[in-house]
Amino acid sequence: MFKNILIAGGGVLGSQIALQNAVHGKAVTIYDISAEAVATAKKWVASFKDLLVADIKEISDEQAQADIAKITYTSDLASALKGIDLVIEAVPESLDIKKDFWEKASDAADKETVFATNSSTLLPSKIATFVDRPDKFISLHFANIVWSHNTAEIMAQPKTESDLPTQMENFAREIGMVPILVKKEQPGYVLNTLLVPLLSAGMYLWYHDIADADTVDKTWMIATGAPYGPFGIIDMVGLRTVSNILQAGTNPDAQGMAKKLKTEYVDQGKLGTESGEGFYKYPDPTFKQADFLK
Image (tube, one colour):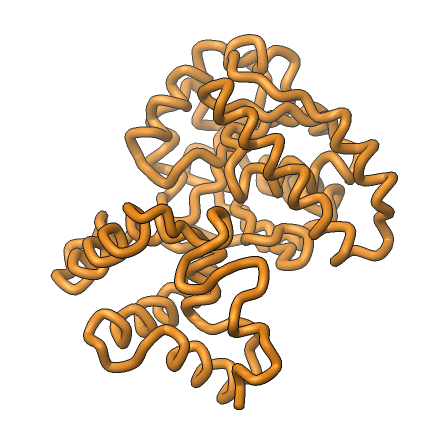
């Protein structure tokens, strides 16, 4: 049913979503707000292609290269939306930015086009107020490193038509994802409802100078056998995103954490894996080195 897919936002996660769709036979267009942003999206797709091929042995480099060569890129939203079956919005986690995008998309999209948001924290019912077709609006949330951490959380809102969650479940399977049907609206969905308390606890220890990031991650990884600690995960999520989420909170600690993150990391261009440096330096972070857990 969903063949022609528009990914709105070609950042770290949007580019991964586009790549995942492309290598599973979907016709993919990436839209971003400027020629510069589009050029960056192309670089992200190319870099993630190498990671996907390394992780998914069934997909050859030649096949992946051929698939991503078919991806269309544009900064013209109106033309990008023509003939699109499904829009997956992956713009920054800001209600104002999402409002601006969805109002413009509503004006330009074909009437049968289905809308989905990849928001990780905002409820679909809140975003649905910005669209002209709330019955065709739903959340479809992907985790970072889409092909490896391949959950697709599907969360309807009260006005979503009854058969759309099943359609999205089928679509998720078509692109190699494991659909996670969320029974009712929940801030943070399933994944982030579980994950955020861990990251918040790590941030609390760091912010109050109880333990540094390395110590927090080392403790968690040794004690649980997890491949990442809270700060390795925060680097993957992106420090800008984490700072924005904290800034939206009302807890005084959250405001302090957001300010510290912004001042010491975001304003210094240390955005996490996307910039090559966050709490760790990439592509060879210390938490992956053999002696880190000793």
